[in-house]
Amino acid sequence: MTETILANATLVLPDEVIRGSIRLCDGEIAGIDQGAQVPAGALDCDGDLILPGLIELHTDNLERHIEPRPKVHFPHASAILAHDGELASTGITTVFDALRVGSIVSRDKASYGEYARLLADEIIAMRQAGALRINHLLHLRAEVCSETLIQELAKFGPQDGIGIVSLMDHTPGQRQFRDLTQLRNYVRGKHGLSEDDFQHHVATQQALSDRLGAEHEAAAVSEARRFGAVLASHDDTTAGQVAVSAGHGARFAEFPTTVEAAQACRALGIRVMMGAPNLIRGGSHSGNVAAKDLAAMDLLDILSSDYVPSALLTAALMLGDLWDDLPRGVATVTEAPALATGLSDRGRLESGLRADVIRVARLGKADAVRGVWVAGRRVG
Image 1 (cartoon, rainbow, N blue to C red):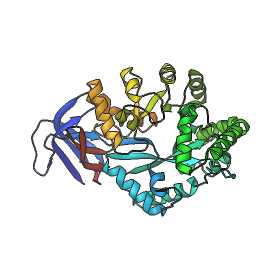
Image 2 (image 1 turned 180 degrees about the vertical axis):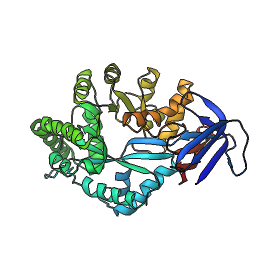
Image 3 (image 1 turned 135 degrees about the horizontal axis):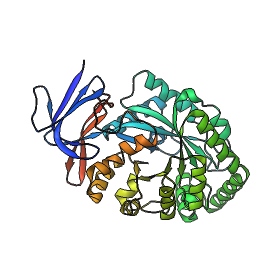
Image 4 (image 1 turned 60 degrees about the horizontal axis):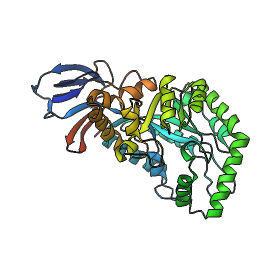
């Protein structure tokens, strides 16, 4: 029997905050007690916060490690380990690694190739070998505006344990990139395109969407059912788009771009997920709705670190301050994402659940992760 006691801590429970201790035994939370006493052999947390481990549903962070600079490809094993260690250091104990399926293989200068099946195999192998610190699950980002989505999805099956399939549609002129100025800045900056190249890219993508978009969307919805995965929408902008997502069976909405879309999600029982960087920066880098505005309107349920892993914890504590309700803020990165994806064994400090917990010190406007335990084993 392995046992760890974290004592004299500020425990953030689902509905209250108490001073007490938490006992981790054989991978589970074995007990929670109130009081500031420090039993023999316990770790004195000196009042630091103890939270459930953070749960990340959508992060592009692994792609950044694999391709740290445009056209610079890094060995996958090293990239996966670096990604895993970075997330552990920020308090994330469960991650759905987002892998794009659907590629552009034509002569478009902004083309990109297939990688998801190979990378998924490597993640699964490293997980089975016990090489990873935290719990890695799979999220397939189904790019509707692509040439190869159906073929790439066919390479996966229920045996892969796909947790999430999200419907991604980056057709120029709508959703995230309804403002072509934002798309121009992004694509030209990333790929070094001339204005003529950019205009060709836009026309090519729009024609591709007209030809294959509906077929690809239907295929992604069908494949999500085959995998047994939770379906998510992405960048819904209008109430009509949200209604379509609801008809497909979407459980949560990644980054709706307008208040209208977020309100429609709430009316149809779809959880709203927004980016932690959006909240911290005070607005969207793409010019879409600000997460802080949705939070003020009670239209925000889940946070994702998106492209900055350390943002997840900071943003959750910011929400706790904004709402004057720390358990509610913490739930946006713990209980709410767990419920959205059917992970009933984690996301709360509660006896019998997985011992995924983190110790956090609040240092003014900064938050320091001082300890991370995954299934009761210290990993950071």
